[in-house]
Length: 284
Image 1 (cartoon, helix red, strand yellow):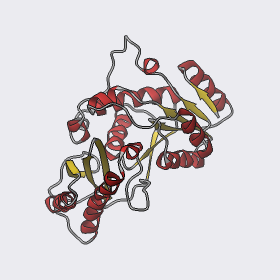
Image 2: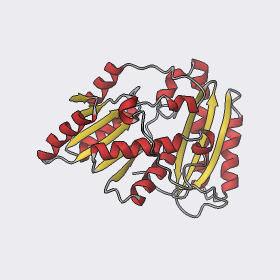
Image 3: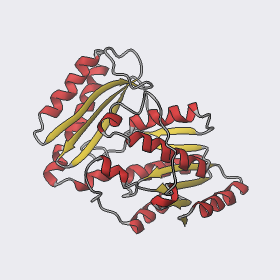
C-alpha cells in the first residue's frame, strides 16, 4: 500500500495504476477508522482494480460544531486498518494542500445544503461538496463509496455529480452497526459508558419509523412523532432534528408516497450523533 501526502505523488501513483488498466474506486474518510469505513474499502475492493482512500479532517469542521477535535487519532492504526481492508493508495493531505492560503472557490448545491445538517451546522455541507469535488478531480474514480448513515451527504453529492456532469458513480453501502443497533462512528469513542447506552435511542427511533412504515403508516407527521417519542424517553438525549424527508429533494413529507428517509440528529453530552433509515427502498 502506498501512502502519499501531496498532489503530484497522488497523481503519479494513480497514473501508474491506470496504465496497468485498473479502474479507480475512491473511499473518503476523516480518519479514526472503524469497521464501517473498512466495509466501504472492502466493497471497493470487489468492484475496482485500484482502491484509493483519503484521510482528511478539516479543523473548520469542529469550529462549526463549537467543540475541539478531541477524538482519538492514531495515524498508524488508521493506515494499518485501511491496508488490511484492501486499500492500495492512501492520500493523507495537509489542510494547506487542499486549501491553499489563496483558495477562494466553494461549491454549493442550492436547495440541498441549507436544511437539516446544513441548518444545524451552517457551512458544513458547502465544505463537504467543495472538498469532495477536489478529491474526485484528484483521484478520477469510476466509483465513490459512501455509507447510508450519511444520507444527506449522499443526496447532496449525488446531485452535485449529476449537475456537474461528472462521470462518477456513487455507490451507497448499508450502515454498519454494533449488535445493539448503534451506527458505527468515530464520534462514538467520545461517549462515556452511560452515554453509549443512551445513544442507542437514535437507532430505536429510526427503527420505530421503519416498523410503522412497514405496517402501513404513511403520515409524515405520525412517523416523526414516533421518532420524537422514542428520543424523549432518554433523558441524556437532546434532539437536534427529527425528519421524514423525500429521498431526492430532502423536502419534509406530509405523506410518504415514494422513497423517503427517516433521519434523526441528537446531542448526547457534548457528542452529536445521527442515524437514518430508508423507507420504501433498498440502500444498495
